[in-house]
Image (tube, rainbow, N blue to C red; front, side, top):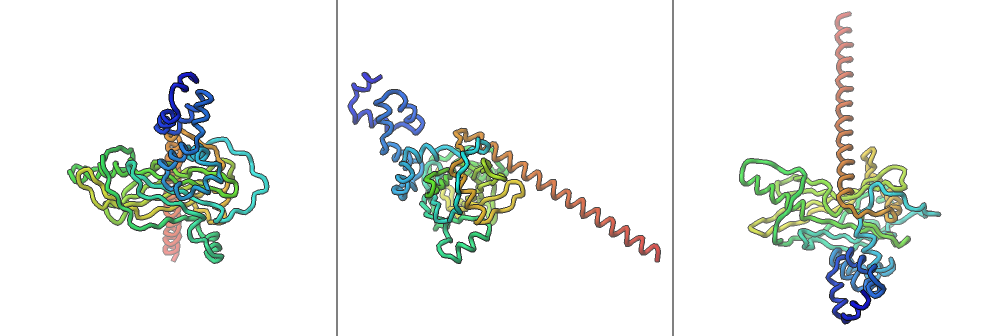
Amino acid sequence: MEQQRQLLCDDVFCGAMRWMDGETLAIAGCVSSSFHRESRNEQLWEDLCAGKWPSVSCARPLIQQLGGFHRLYSECSRLVSPDGSPPPTKAAVFSPQASDFASLVDVQFQGKTLFSRFVDGIPGTGTELTTEWFSSCPFRVDLIQESSCLPQQDRGGRMEEDTPSSSSSSSTEMGKLWKEICEGMKLSWILIDKGSKQAANLSSWRPVLGQRHWPTDMDFILRYGSILSQCLPKPVECSIILKCRLLRSSGSSIEIKLTELSMQLKDVGSGEHLNGRDGLPVLCQAVSFAKCRDEERVLRTHRELLKRQNELKVHELKHEWCLDVYVLVLVLAALALLLWTV
């Protein structure tokens, strides 16, 4: 292999390696010493990261502090494992602050970038007053943006989620558009802990759930996220909500406007939102959780958990309804008995 490598000039060899994806490039680095040396070229990994997450172009100094683009790609191209082995326990954990974190957020639709932003800290926590408000209120990170519209080409896709069904041609066409939006919309939310110099992708890349959203038939809500269960007293769901509106669809062109993008942390058992004070330590530990390349398993585990949550809510509602009926029967019986004695 080394002899064959020597037959190629460096420019041709490096040019060939630029066409490789991250996994192929990592495998090529195990072939020989010369392949390993070339595969460690930081510029190759920077190009890969920029193609996958355009927001990295605004955070180059921070990524260098983390260990470079090679490490960023290795850590964040995989999803947080919902049931992996817990990481080593951190010693002397200090109380994390909102300014200790940064985020790289990218939304793509069928390979085209709709939204890309580097967020230093957590929006809305710049002053002492807002920080105290953030600590006491439910944890929520909102990324507000102006109208973000983009014409798209080569429509196509499939998603096995809730879709409207109707025999009419208009409903059928809207159902196809809905599937294309769900299948084509990809979201990445990379969280960086500047203190520990670690990073993790808290999104599921593809939607966990999706549905039509009020106020019009052109509004959609997609739900991404991850299950944070390793080394935590109680499992926590990192829920990332993306709302979008279909502005126009004609021929092979789709025009979309993003209307909301937010992150919340919820207790998996109770469904209650964590406040900012409890949420920041969870994020501090989440960046060191085990990662998983099996995207399907991550999505399947997350969807099964949400299904169990819905079943539990239905059970609780039925229990409350039965209890209400029981109390009402007792009250009516007592009232009937009182009237009969009189």
